[in-house]
Length: 307
Image (cartoon, rainbow, N blue to C red; front, top):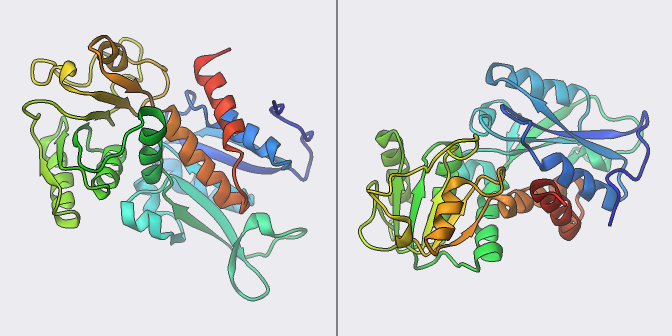
């Protein structure tokens, strides 16, 4: 097992960080610092509470201080689209960013990650936004629930930033039918219409389904706070009608939804796997190297579940 920090902190240490509000619950620092140590990098990964009105200043400050990169969590993933200098195809495809890489021009004029520069950095630095969340949910469903999305019926709760990206990415796998439910019906209808336009093969509605579904996904924030109940009314959809339940929340490790779903006989998983896969891809974008996924997984599981 790698120690959290192998190289003593010094004046040459480079930095990455996650920005969010709230952010104290984040397990990303434990996971990323373990990954960086395993790669032998003199890097540290931090977490900062940043208000939405301060997001632009925070990104520009990290760029000015020559951070290697940033992760973004709630509520910044959509707003940051307008605050970076360039967008990767993954960002434009899914309409949100959760990873920023700072880059400079090499002698040939090509933009390269700051990791590739030794010694003094060029004066001109830009921020490029990526989305590593979208593919992470598909990877997590495969690993944690042994599920392929194609041909399934899915009920997805939540149509905010995280819910929209999850809905679009799952729709790209061509389930037979998707049911999108949100507290504000107009938001759910907006996402449903986007799916109809981009993936017309997928039957989409904004009502609770009749009969059973193969998968229920919670993309709401209900469950984050102690005392939170269920993110849905079981009078409208009893949980025993879902074969599997995936909660994108990872702390607490077992939300009320997962506890009730498990008691109802559903296969269940929390958002730990999604956090792992999006974080591993972010580390690869910053380093240009293969992420030590198992080291990161061990650190993440220890942080979320304890010893």
